[in-house]
Length: 177
Image (cartoon, rainbow, N blue to C red; front, side, top):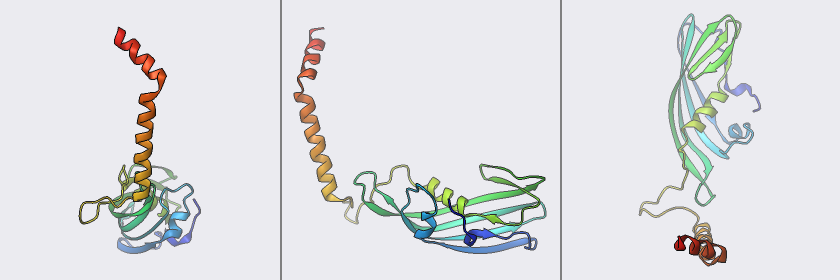
């Protein structure tokens, strides 16, 4: 992941209380993450940071859409995204690795880059199976040519499997026993 100043929140100079931040994500944001399955996207991130003397609470609301490949036809489509997450930040003598929704930072830290957290929240909230949504008539929006090729392949594969003489020999052994 390449770093950028665009998603850094300088919290050291903030007063105790609530502070609002707004970030716009575009395709360039997702390109920063090597090997990302998200190709493009357009999202708005609203961060409400509540600062206390010994901790901070960051409420992140992410809204928009990201372009992902369809698991059925492999053609890209826009997957809607609407996420609300909370990240707690505590301060200690030294920085410690993040646990679930808790980040422990050194008291010497003065800013926080939230780009990795935003990306992680988006990835974790994507559906396990990503398939084109149906249109208003209930028909699949998948690439019809690709679906046709898949159906032909499956039909050919099943036909070859049933006509393979090795399988016939094995079936005859099963039937004899």
